[in-house]
Length: 337
Ligand SMILES: Nc1nc2c(ncn2[C@@H]2O[C@H](COP(=O)(O)OP(=O)(O)O)[C@@H](O)[C@H]2O)c(=O)[nH]1
Ligand SMILES: [Mg+2]
Image 1: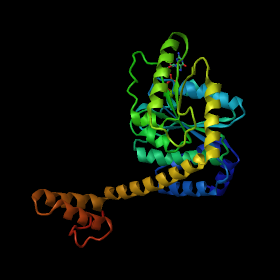
Image 2 (image 1 turned 180 degrees about the vertical axis):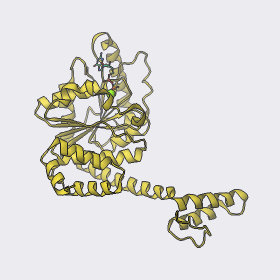
Image 3 (image 1 turned 45 degrees about the vertical axis):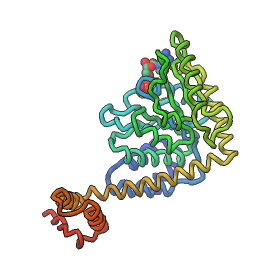
Image 4 (image 1 turned 135 degrees about the vertical axis):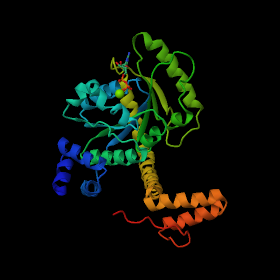
């Protein structure tokens, strides 16, 4: 494959080339990884999309919202890419793939690009792939990249750490409890959108919105927020209500952050975070190699027998990881025939 040609096509905004590029970054093959790195390096560096992370539990209306909100953006003349981080996708078949029908209109728009989530269970791998897919979309000249995630555990943190804006989508609650949204996730949100504020659900949506607006006011003030943010507001993805207002409020927040320097500062901090994460995960992956596993097993047994102190064994293990087999007296794994 001609990498230079592929990069140029991506930079020219060709959707099929972009899809091909994303396939490369998602691939586990070493040659594909090397090509992906080359493609990423060859893309224009002066393009910046607004990255919007969107999280919510299954059924709150993420797909419906992305379709309606995406159409709002496209009609405003913007190009929109939709990506997904879904650690459960290996089981569910992807958070976007399954309901591309819900994005029927958006998927037919020339200004839109929708990419189903890769089927990969390991969150660390998903994070890198998604970051690189975002970079490809930016290089392809998209104005907005929506990164969807199902609200399960760590995936919100992953998405928040690669977004300029993090939006939490909630449904109207029946009772008066705060739907068990974890404080840590609330603290990441720049906007909380109470979806389904229509028909019979409207009164409940109003109560839920007021509850969350109150809860947000109780959180510690963050330096990157102007007055009035983070904000809770009502929308209806189905009735397409409140979407223009939500977009206007997002733009207002982004402009403020740009002028106050927080936009670039956050991106810089995120880049540093991912650098450190990549180092950490690369170090951890060293434990997966056959020699390391064998050393762990052997040293572990000696610790269990009481022949070696845990800390001494750990020091020997680090020697093994450094490629120094002497002190640990661990035999390297013989080459397989
Ligand atoms: N009443 C109402 N229903 C909605 C709204 N948005 C989504 N839904 C419905 O909620 C269900 C789940 O929506 P979906 O977009 O698939 O949610 P997801 O699992 O978060 O992607 C579907 O039956 C939608 O029609 C809304 O704004 N109002
Ligand atoms: Mg969905």
